[in-house]
Length: 452
DNA sequence: CGGATTTGACCTGCGC
DNA sequence: GCGCAGGTCAAATCCG
Image: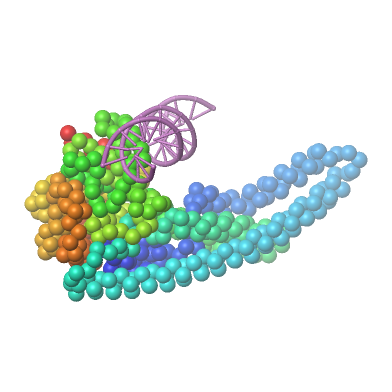
């Protein structure tokens, strides 16, 4: 996620999943049913008491009409009231149980949060050590597999799923819990003043509103894509990973077929959709590697990770619903508009990195800071980013040339660039500069980029 | 012969 | 509810 290599695992406070612009996102503060939550909000806000009255009254009316028989109206009403109360009591006891389970699940979520943070800190330490080693220029080091996520957007979906379920259940129970309170209030004949209830409802709605935003955030995190445009004779970008083609489709509106690849470096790596073209290969990265990446794959991984990270942080609304002003300030940079575009109409937010322009122009488009960063690193990485026509050949030669010096230089280049916070900042500026123009630049089909 | 690729069938989500 | 398009699966085929 961070534009960093193995030595710059994001700090917990800056991790998109765990925090957003310094504001921690607690797992138990996520709403996976925004629609439902909204309904509940509205319900709580305006119609709650009326609705409850309505149900009770209707029920009584209907039952009264249907139970004429030998009993008088008063007897029927009394009996039905008793029934109604016993029903409420049963519901209340059930809701109490749910609340208890809710509490238990909340504790589980807290525990998971703590574990996650601890693990992240360990990762930071480890990667920091590796970074230091890389800076010391260790020679003769063998090309080793370095564990790092490809698109590090938080925990993998597999890991995340149980938490989602827990949070979902938690929220459901929270909502039920609030209903339970209201029912109890009803049964107690309004011991609590309506004003206090209004305040409680307001607090609840505020909380739920935040949960809505967080759920959207999480959804974005999971769905964001990074699309890389590059000129290449090959059918796909040789980015250092080992891809296996598993399908091909004729995409509508594009004479060129769209190919689907999976990473074969791990049996269950959820990875990529790749669209190909005659002269320009569009590679759309989605998901994250769940295995170690070779250094040859780290450059692209870092680039796409950074792009995804910045896309998410720049496109996600802050807690008050506003785009972070610092991001907008950085958007004033006149660079990168020809280099990165945001597809707003895509099903998921997609940042497109256009590497099809010549290196000189690209560096000219970049901010001076970013250009310096690119210039100051070994050419090998500059090529991989700026001269994509050589990328395929570059990686092929890497495959043949397994000399340690090559691997080291590549490692060092990747490490130097991706670990540098200035690079991150520059990339933030470059990518977020298009956020304000997303509508102008959106193509509607991020895969369809036939330049032939 | 084993792994990679091809390709038609199937599944799923979304819009009308 | 239906049709369409995108995405995935899996058997057949290819190739080293």
